[in-house]
Image (cartoon, rainbow, N blue to C red):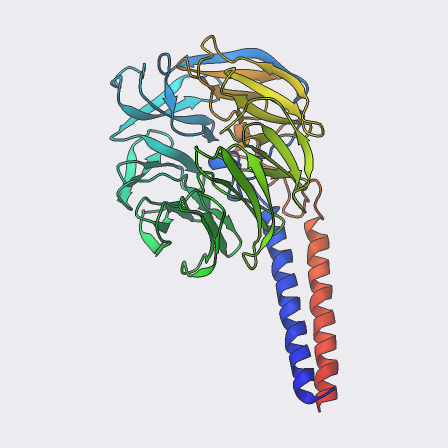
Length: 463
C-alpha cells in the first residue's frame, strides 16, 4: 500500500470513529431528561412520549375550571411546571377581567384547578414553554414579541421583539430558547434576560418549532426545507429540499429527523420523510393520504403520525406497522407504554389506540360540547388534563399510579415533587429500548482505544 493511500485510510478511519463517537454522544444526550412536560410535544426532540400504561385510565373527574364559553380556542398545548398547569386562550373568554375577544395565559393549580393568575396579552399565543430553572413561562405571540412570565405571579419579567409575528413553539435547551419568526429567521434567545445570542436567516417562509439535540438544531420551514444548524453560532450545516410545505414541526430519534409535509389542499396528499441527522440525506419517504399537519411522534423504533387517518410505520424503513380508520387528522399523538392517545376532530373525543395494532382501546368525550376537538392531553403523575372546546379545563383521575412525565421516554421528576426532589431517573438509567448510559460510555471508550491502536499501527507502518 502506498503512503498516500495509507494516509487516506488513516484519515478515513479517524473520521469514521469521530462520527461514531458523535452518534453515541447524541444518543446518550437524547436519553437524558429531568423535566416534566414543559414544552411543545414534551421536550426538545418532540418525542411526545410518556411512561406508563393507558389501558386502565379511569375517567373520574378530579376538577373542572371554566375559562371560556362554547368554541373557546386554545392556541397552545398546555404545559406543566412547579405544581401548575399553564394554558393560553383566546376568543369567547369567560375569565373575569379578560374581554371576550382578548387573549390570555392562565396558571391553574394542578391539584385543584383553581386559577392562580391571568395575564392578558395583545395577540394570540402561538405556544407556551416553561423553564423550571428560571421559574418562567415563555409565550411567543403573534405581535412578534416573546414574553417571559413569572410562574408564581404572571408578571412580565421581560419581552423581546424578534420579528413581525411568531408562529412556532419555543424549544428550551439548557439556558437558551430557540424559536422561529415570520421574518424567516431562527433565533437563539437567553432565557435569563431575552437577549439574542444569534439569529440565522433561513430563507422564505417561517420556521416550525425547532429540535435541539446536543450541538445540533434541526428545523423545517413552511416553504418546504429542512435544515441543521450549530448551537454555538447558528451556522447552517446542511439544507434539504422536501416534497411539500412543512406545517408540522419535525421530531428526532436515534439520529433520524422525521418531517411531515403537505402538498396542498387541492392534492389532499402529503409525505413523511426520514432524514439522516448527520448529513441531511433522505433515508426514506412515503406518500400519505392527506396532509401531514401534526408533528410525527416516535417511540421504540415506531413513528406515529396522521394524514387522513392515524398510521404507524417503522422508523428504520418507513414500512407500515398499522393503519387505523379513526379520524385524527391534523392532531399529534401522545405515546404511552401500551397506547397512542389522540383527539378526533370529527367526534370531539379523546381516543386511545393500541400501540401494536392501532385498534381502538376506548374513547371518551371530556366535555358536553363535542363540536371541536380538545388540544393534546397533558399527562401528570396521576391524572390527565384536557382543554375542552366548551370553555372548560378538566382533570381526570388515572387508575394507574405508575405513570410519570417523560421527555425522550425517560422517567422524569414527578410534578408534585419538582420544587424539592431530584429526578427519579439517574443519569445512568436507560430509556426503555435503549442501552444504559454506562454501556454507551464503555462502547465509546473502547471505540476510541481501538481507533488509537490502529492509528498507531499505521503510523508505525508509515515510518
